[in-house]
Image (cartoon, rainbow, N blue to C red; front, side, top):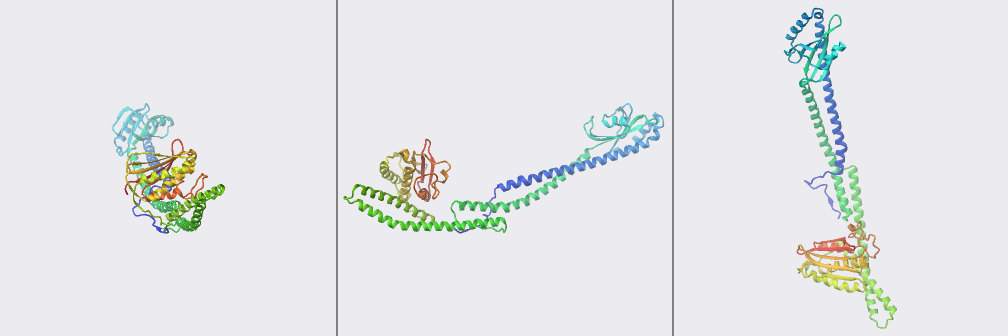
Length: 481
């Protein structure tokens, strides 16, 4: 109570929280999409730039070369073709460009790569140049080889307006494509570096939010489970710090209220014990008088019974306050747990018989060793569970009890045949002051006290609905501690 909790244990791992997932989905995914678009745009822009420049340069060359041959076109065909061959043989850029001359029949007349008369290429730039009588270009795969190329064809127009051939420049785009790919990869690499920086800085930022939020959540859960007074230590002077301070203030106030409640219950319980003891004593004294008439005796029995019930409630409240402030202790000794359980069942069975409820003890010949426990407190647990079974499941008129040894544990099961517990209330029935939808009178702390006693013995107490109806309470106690 009231102790400060550090921000985080050294070396603890931070799990991927909902905030991290949302940040990753909303921010990183958008950055990745934008980065991919940017990489594609940069690559396409450079590709368009390089392809356009290369095509423009080839068109310029084709236009200049066609102008150079204008004088020869006014001569006869033989002089023209001989000029083409001579020019092609002396073509200086043959390492990067191929120069071709194609006649009007579509035959390759000469090529700077050494190809002579033969079938000309079939790309669209050649046929288009014949038709439009203008320079045409082609970008794509070579139909013959499948290699990507750029080709520019310029028509050779005779003096009468007749197109007698085509001058064609063609080059492979392999080197250009490699250069564009390199630019794309560099752009992608730059994006990955930027993304890495964003992830690193974003992860630091998200951790600065997620870590304190996780701490606040954990402490809030502890406060919700009853650890009032727990404090959160935070270094942040922002909304996170304000939230932590609010939770700390809430925890302090809950702790104060819990202490006031516990002190009040403890004081009230002690104050009630004295008059209840007097009432019980005088009711027993008056009941021992043989001269009481029947109506008075009946009334005194009711007073005695209700006083006994109130005394049990006061004892539960006192035990509860001792548990709350840490004064609850056990007197542990080696005990015959089977004997304690069977004695309790037989004693309580006679009481239930008066109410028309049958309490059956399942006999088991297996030997159960003595175990270290507080026999008085374990009797209290058994009586409370049996009493709950009678109160909440008594309409079934039958309760079954059994004790046996299972896997180095002593297991006690008590089942009633009542309506059972609603599924949504099962996880809550052991909470202090919780009564759920039950209309049975009581403080709602009996099971909470029993659960604490069993836990102090190193065991467990569980409740579940039994097949066919009713509730099963199971107590498991270790044979040795």
